[in-house]
Length: 132
Image (cartoon, rainbow, N blue to C red; front, side, top):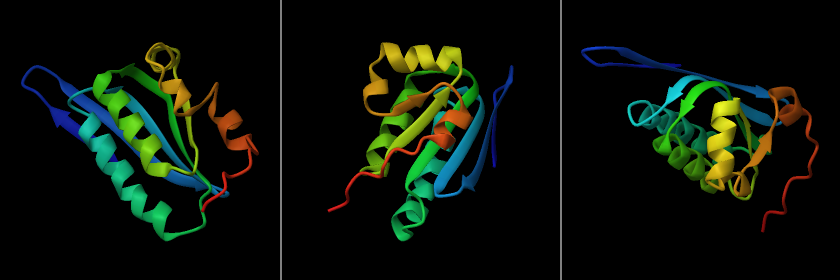
């Protein structure tokens, strides 16, 4: 899925791809996550909510931000929403150096499992939290 949003002076494009890897639901994001593009990202995450809630198939959501060049406050809000939405399942996040810095400085890394790269996030065999 691609979210294309235009302004008179520039084009802002956010590319979102969703797939699975075993029991993980994986969302890969490319572009800039700012006030213009964050609503599209949140809409895609909301679409995944039904899949996560409806099936027992997925033990975690992985959001790959390794190709994100900018992560603004609107993007941080979307990540916080995703972390709350996936509870009690973990939210695994990989991030570019720019996005990682913002996630760490704001303390959002306490709400998400932050990984250096996608293979590490996919390989983590952490047990699924108990569901009451």
